[in-house]
Image (cartoon, rainbow, N blue to C red; front, side, top):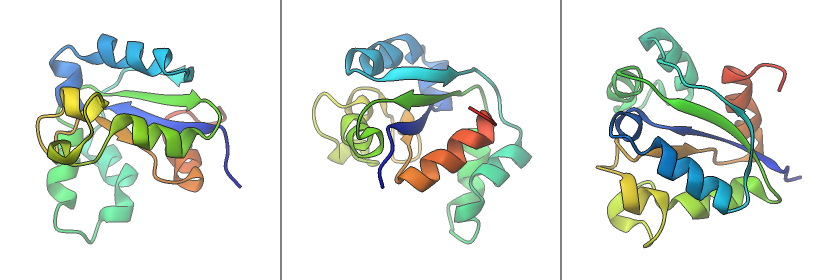
Length: 136
């Protein structure tokens, strides 16, 4: 069963490069309601916990290092068919393959520094959202 909520976070490079405002504007213009939002810097331990599902993958440590290097903007968003539609809206994980007009095509620097995260399932959206916003 699909829900109407998804989780996203604007990643360190996009925050550091001043893209937070334009990204949030586009999210809201696309009809997503921001249910929860904050700005924070994850510790390496928090990044490790958040990305524990990838702990056996070769990119795990570099991902944790990247995500804990500077501030991020985690958010819970609401809209009908939120997870699937948001993944289409932000574009392919690899910005070189992302469709024109998507967030990643506009703001990503590389596969790792791809500007924004979007949950890949309703279950993960709930888990990821609860990590940053317990009880929301």
